[in-house]
Length: 380
Ligand SMILES: Cc1cc2nc3c(=O)[nH]c(=O)nc-3n(C[C@H](O)[C@H](O)[C@H](O)COP(=O)(O)OP(=O)(O)OC[C@H]3O[C@@H](n4cnc5c(N)ncnc54)[C@H](O)[C@@H]3O)c2cc1C
Image (cartoon, rainbow, N blue to C red; front, side, top):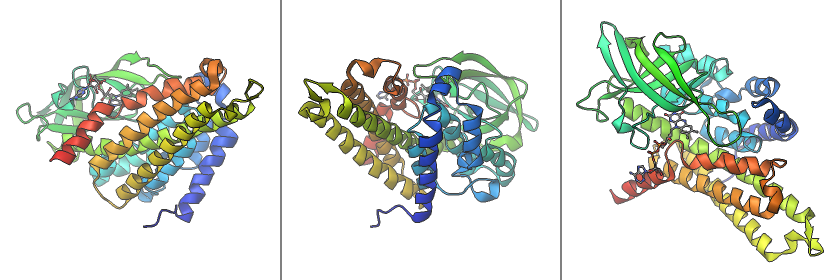
C-alpha cells in the first residue's frame, strides 16, 4: 500500500493552496460585499484549468482524475464557497453524465465549454414530489417524430437559472419508471419551453443559486439523449456516486480552515490570565476536530483513488459523503464554541461557514439516504 500523494498531484495541490491563501481568502470581504465571487478570481480559476480537472484533455480539460480534483477542491474550499460552486458543478454533476454516458458528438460539443468555464452546466433530477425518492419523478418526455417533448418541473437545481446546459432526467416509460423507464436529456439554454419558475434562496452565504425550472412542451432532438433510452436512472445514480466524493473533499477544506482558525484564536484569546488553548476543554475540542478530519481525509482520498482505478464504489462514496459532511458539521459547531461570542459575529468567517456547511448533509443525497445505501449494500 502506498499512501503518498504522487509528485505531479502535489504540484497541482500546492498551486490550489497558494491561490486560496494568497488570492481567494484575502478577497473574501469583497465576495461578501458583492454577493458573488469577483470575476478576476473566477477568471484565475478558469485560467488554471480548474473547471476541467476531471474532463479528459481531448475535450479541453486537464484529464487529471478524481484524486486530483479532491486535492484541489480541498485546498480551494478553505476559501469562501462562492468560489467553488460553479467549478464543483463543472467537475461534478454538471459534466458527469456526459463523461460517463455521453456520445462522442455530445462530449465534443459540450465538454470543452464546460472545462473552460465558458458555459455553466446543471443537473436536474429533484422535483417537488421526488427528492430522496427520485424514482417517483413526474417530469415526462414523449416522442413526437424525431423529437422528445418534455413537461414537468424540477426544483432546488443548482445554477438552474443561469445554466447553459442542463442534464434533465425524465420519465419516458410510465410502466417501467426507474427500472428502464427514465431517460437523461440535454436541454440547452434558450430552448423554447425551458424556463425559470422561481429563484430559491437558501440558508448560508450568497450566492443563492438554486432555482425551480420548468419544461413546458420543451422539444429536444433525439440526439440529446445521454446514454440510451431507458438508462436515465442509472445515469443519475452513477453521476451522484462520483459527485459525493467531491462533496466530501469540500468538507475537508472547510474543516481544516475552521480548525486552523480555532487554533489561532485559542492561542491568542486570553481569559483567566491565560490563553484559552491552555484549558483542557478547548484542547479536547481541538483534538476531536483533528481526529475526525484526519479520518475523513483518508477515506476520501482512498475513494477518489479507487474511482480513478475505474472501480464502482457506490457504498464507499456514500460512506465518504456521510462521514465527511457530518464531520464538518461537528467541526463547525466546535469552531463556533471555541470562538465564544465572536463565533456568531459576522465579522469572522466562522459564522458564515457554520451556516454554509449545514446543507452539505442534505444535497446529493441526505445523510439518511447515504445510510440506507450503505446498509442495503452491507445486508445484500
Ligand atoms: C442547496 C441545494 C442544492 C441542490 N442542488 C441540486 C441539483 O443541482 N440538482 C438536483 O437534482 N437536486 C439538487 N438538490 C436537491 C437535493 O438533492 C434534495 O434536496 C435531497 O436529495 C433531499 O430531497 P428533499 O429535499 O426532497 O427531502 P425529502 O426527500 O423530502 O426528505 C425529508 C427528510 O426525510 C428523510 N427521508 C426521506 N426518505 C427517507 C428514507 N427512505 N429513510 C429515512 N429517511 C428518509 C430525508 O433524509 C430528510 O431528512 C439540491 C438541494 C439543495 C438544498
